[in-house]
Length: 88
Image 1 (cartoon, rainbow, N blue to C red):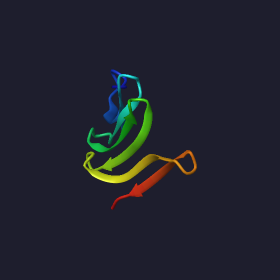
Image 2: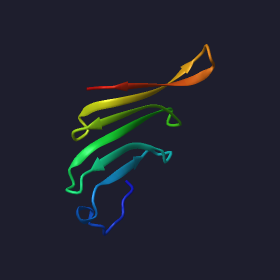
Image 3: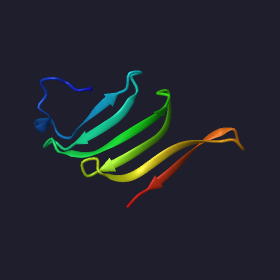
Image 4: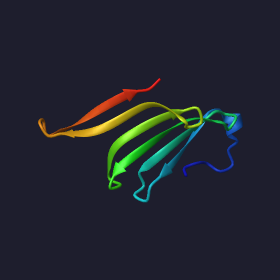
């Protein structure tokens, strides 16, 4: 977890906390209101902990999915394609 000790976030405003996997890549970012309540989060999934394969955005205390990004290989073009999906 990445944070600064001794800071009163309630006095400073909104903030985020990053969580890292064993290879030091962020796999979760939680966003907080100044009150300490969770606004939302972003979850990142890696293939074999190295390559980002998707990213999912949530709101409402990390319960409601609002956006998803997927990194998919296209064999026809021999490139990666980023697919984006929005949820209501």
